Length: 259
Image (tube, rainbow, N blue to C red; front, side, top):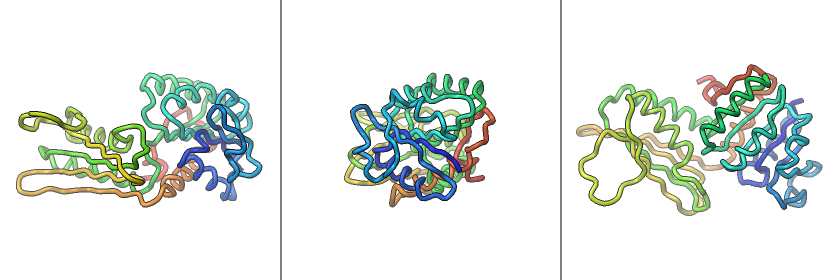
């Protein structure tokens, strides 16, 4: 039985992951991390699951096999050092964590012998989307690249972690390119750049389009998420894959999905 603790348990994705973990025959949800001031009353959908504040994270993960972080960048930067202990494995879906914080976490992971899946997006489709971006970028050298991402009007960060990851994958495949975010004013002719445009409107779960434009033609690659359950189901796959791996390494969803 894989014993799981979820951070960000009252968030949109966190609550779905908690519910889905509880339905797995090989998993047990033993704790839910909530923001300061919340209590178990916020977790009525999770009967019998104890809610912990962030300051009690070490206690919450004491008997856990996997800690899942689905919080915010600042919360994750505080939570990961608190949670780290020998043999504990991690699934991290929080994006925007400072690089130096991730470097420190990776060093501690190695010393503790744990493992982690770090993913900007858990859905199977998005990870196939990433692979397709890589192949198209290799096949279309010299094409202009634009990325458009759309999310609901409550999303706080821009651009999305998925859009950033797609841009980085394409830049690696095409050679280094400048990243810019939106355009305004007299910008002059387009340069060697990948531009990401972020739209925030309505209740859109998530939509990403990459445009490869050449002379007389273009290719548009789009992924649309219809439900957050696609992310939650991928997160559960990551939990099952990482549990007990204990190799001191950080892994990606492409490894989990073997693509």
